[in-house]
Length: 216
Image (cartoon, rainbow, N blue to C red; front, side, top):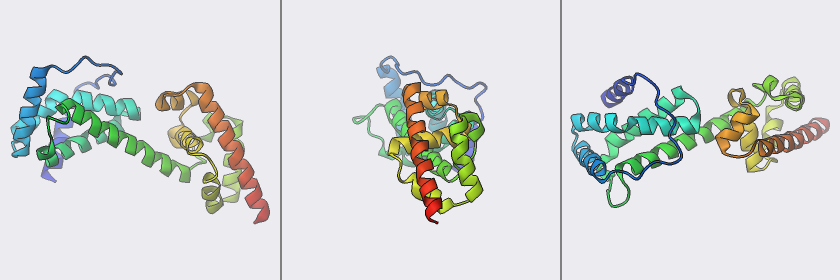
């Protein structure tokens, strides 16, 4: 608990949100890599001052990547805290021969950010009717059907008939009411691909729900 409070206090030092991590960065400076690796070795020995130095030298990169994946500063902040708590607890596992300190941090951050997206997408499936006003009449038809019937089991069963990509795209669209453009940017795909996935997914979902309700 004390370690968590320390990491939380460090994250609050930021005075301005850094830019989202760009796609390309120059190769790491060997001297910086050696310095950060040395700090990590000290962290592994429980050196709190080394941890503070390591955090202040790298947190913009971690937060920037988390923000790039999640698009929400508050959630990116949570991921940043999780990453540094993991660093504090497992620094002895770091091996410079396998990755640079920054490379290790980026791997940890990306993995946790993607896991958070997947978790939120799964949760959003259970609340599929939320945010439908922003997404057009096709969404309204499905949302109204679900809302009027309140057949949660039927919805879950019908969602299983969607492809993985359809289910992910529909879930992201409904989670927080994201627009087509935001979903496309988040997934790194074209706007037309997003529209096609959502249109086809909703059509399949609507047909499944209609058949389920008729047979009920």
